[in-house]
Length: 243
Length: 282
Image 1 (cartoon, rainbow over the protein chains, first blue to last red):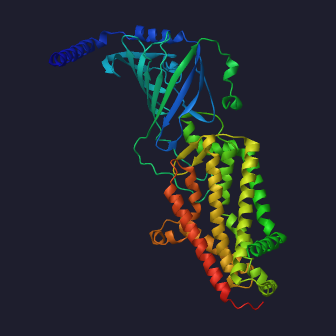
Image 2 (image 1 turned 60 degrees about the vertical axis):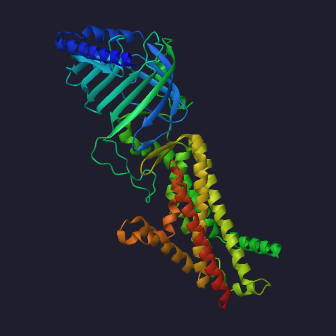
Image 3 (image 1 turned 90 degrees about the vertical axis):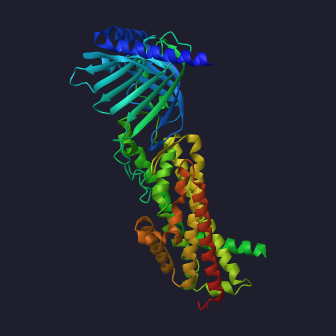
């Protein structure tokens, strides 16, 4: 028992030393090959379908857990077929944040860090295009599998948002995640009165000025990758999405 | 005895449904329900966008929120304040109308007690209220589902609730059942006022005035009114909305049901006592 504790202690010191040493050489590390590897890995996925479960956690919204089938096609076509009503985050459903990489950017390796019990490279991305919506993004990339573990981004339109990725124990050939957890700013969201026509209705809970966050977790299962989905399938068809 | 009472109720019902004013409620409800459904069909999407605009900045919506259940909820929200006036129009005429027409004395010549007369009339007005509420429920749910189909129910209160379609119908039906109790309370108030006077317009106007004043006091949040709010029946009439929260605040609903039942009993008791001692001259 005592031996176990000492071993763990020595191991943690070792990991800390490794992380610190690599951080010293941070400026010398060129993150571009790593980012290319991440991009190339996902570029192998032309399209996929998956069964998903969506859980929304927002202070001013109560919605049951929704199930459905998600269809994705490169570069950013997304369609959810579910029974009833469901909500998806506006961005982040294509896993790689193509919008980050599609125009010129600067990538800076910052440090190594343990994120979700995984040793990761921490890389900052600064888009150089003035018109880009994302102002700054920080990526945590698994050193071993070269998959994204977490993205923390600041955008012009929606404030800051964080996306965490969990992967299955048995990795699939395309390294697709089993769960995505989105956390984003909803401070701007307000509830208008009078939508129901009920003049005596309860007033919305007054919100203080503290930033409000929404958390949306999506679990993925039964992936089918590169089976071929036509573009016409993604045309807005309300009846289709309600099947 | 029971047969005689049933016969009395039947006669009272015939009296109610022979009068033109009894159909004003049905006509008004049918008109408003159909107008709201048409308006939602034409302009529903932009109407709903108003409520979801800020959410759409962060979320993409999948599925249709403009459905039959939402239309029923909007109709319920819009009409629950106004239906009492249609009920008062009939209930306020029940005793005073006969007094002004001079048929009350003739009615009391029969070998029946005054209490029986009151109970028969009250039973008849309850049946009328039930018919109005069922008519509104069937029409709103029927046309809503026919035009828009089923879907998840979107409710905006102190926060946004989205109920699955399988979880929505029972809430709507429960709200209508509660509305029956609220409207019965309004009917009992108008009925009581109807026993005090000999003119049918008086009780109707008085009932409307009381409801308007109470509703204004209930909705204005002054500290001076807070102490009296628990004693005003209008504070309990809106408890149907509690069926559209998650979890449902059953304690609030039970409290409202008990309060409304107590008001009905009180108003009916006062009516019976007063009518038994009333000097019927016409």
